[in-house]
Image 1 (cartoon, rainbow, N blue to C red):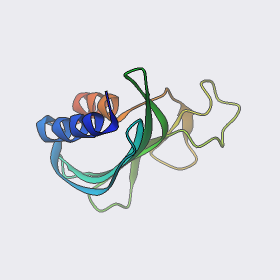
Image 2 (image 1 turned 180 degrees about the horizontal axis):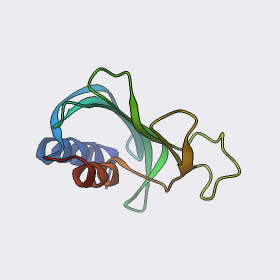
Image 3 (image 1 turned 60 degrees about the horizontal axis):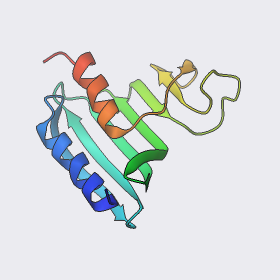
Image 4 (image 1 turned 120 degrees about the vertical axis):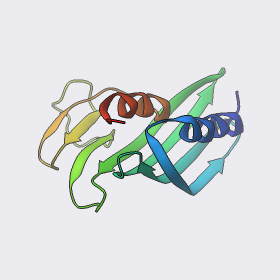
Length: 128
């Protein structure tokens, strides 16, 4: 797999997901064996989601190297959740992966996550 194929897979998944009403691609970079994808998304419940993911591909396996997925209310005023792996909570299990839940201060341990896995979570959490 090359970055171009992974990027196309992301876009196809965004189009097909019941959790997604619309999206705008902000930036898309393809360097063959690595890349970046950033988009702003309107969820099916009218909430807002911003996704940003750096990834690399080694022996046809995609690894997310840096990510931030921020889910907010429709006015972009209230944080629902933000998943990221910025290394600023070293005492949490699974460091650096963590989730901000409903506020910047409420931080729990998370797992490595990619856009496809995020969409799986949103499809479970959003009521259709």
